[in-house]
Length: 431
Image (cartoon, rainbow, N blue to C red; front, side, top):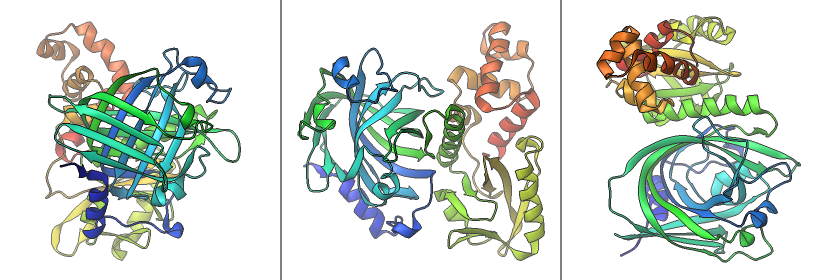
């Protein structure tokens, strides 16, 4: 029997009190962090001349004229969840993310609930829905504007173990005010390979989606256990701003994956972001009430001083001293670390009595390193010389030395001491 996974996930989240549909007044600004997402995706190749007419003249379609379609559900998270969405995109040149993924121009999007209200600056989206129906060997997704079906996709499951995948994309979209914006998205999920069976477009032929007829279907995936962080939109021409917001989205996605308690706040303590781990720890040591972050009054002055130091931008945050958050029921305080992020702060909270985060090699891969880079980074961060690390890994010393530069670039550090501090924190408390 086919199960309506998206509908059931949303109903369950709401009934258990883990998700709340935000009102218009309470929708916060990005970043939005989503958990427990399920995706059905189909990649396609298009006629290049046909799809080139669907994108603005400022953009150029990749030579292979690729893109695709997907439907997904986001039952849990911060900001706009729960919601469902239906999307279609075309791959674009010149807007690749750090992991090499092409920029994606949104031809069509249909979002439900608060997500539609939050993203309606995007001229390509409408208020709508998506639904995923799963059987033991087949998955079908449908979606479109409210009350209509514009897209139907189907894939056949294939045998094999799900593969953990993570990465980043820039989504490009037209805006109602004119021009194009870039929206960074960081993601991780379990990728289950599938065989594409069909894509049925029943959108009116005069609409962009109705004109996006694929020449052939190239790949398919049934994605589960997804974690997504959608960052702040910026003008397409602001490449530096886009890179900065992408870095922030990727970092917040990483914090959610390792279940590290994280809260992004403004200098006035207004909350911009909070993840599930922070919600579980809140209530003794720090509070998340009425959209504001607060600590016990007896450490208010120390907290203000720590915020000023972090906002000053002086020194590396890896070396900055943490602050203790006293709790009523324990002699051991929570440990808070403040990380500057543009005009805001990210508060990382560790319970010393809680479980340790992921292994450092896995965590470094979540931060963007390749498996080979992560193995070298852990050894060098642990204090080994290049020759000793090379001997341990059975590679040449020149390989170790040449790998250090991309490691430093991807982690945003400049020297071995910072790498050592990072590896130590990943090993001990999962920061």
